[in-house]
Length: 265
Image (cartoon, rainbow, N blue to C red):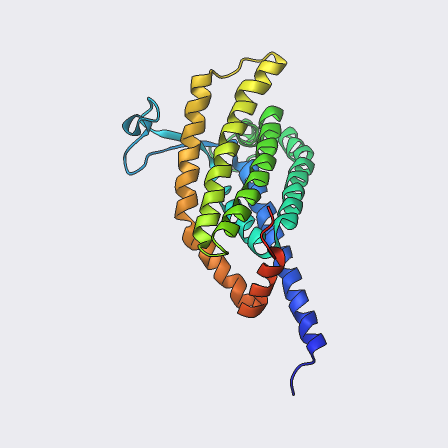
């Protein structure tokens, strides 16, 4: 006996709600992870080639924050949420992510403040405490700058994504996803560096970075983000296929149409 239409509709709505919850959890989780990991710096080269080899600076190696290992995954989540649910949910998730990060700041500060104890041989209590302070003790200016830059980049991302989707008639997922990411992350990368290390320090009387240094670090970080954005294209398609399989092709297409009925600007 066929399932009543009302029951089928309820099951579909439940699946859509679960999908939205999961996407929200992943989006917020990746963003918070990127913010927490952002205090660690690491060096890398592109197949043995550094900034000096590519005309991007004088250093032999690129320097980036560990946060950008997690942050590109928010690109995927942003594009998937926009594709299936539209701008309103992207905006909501963005504000939730920012709110969660702000609410976590007192918790992180408290975790840094309590004295550390080490049971690891060769590592003293002071070593452990210093490690936490270095890894998690981001300044207020960095936190503020990253949140402002993130909000601005998300606003730009959803608009570029929607515009490209309309221009391509809903085709070429990779183009609208990567196009929106490449543009929004250009703004995000330069905004966070210049806010955190040039504008805010200048405003409060602290020693700012030089324009040349800020530009060099921004460019380095953007090169990394650009390469990751291109490299994770298969992940985007894999998540897209998983969502279609979970909802069903027809239900997924209906959800997309509801989110972008005429691709308004």
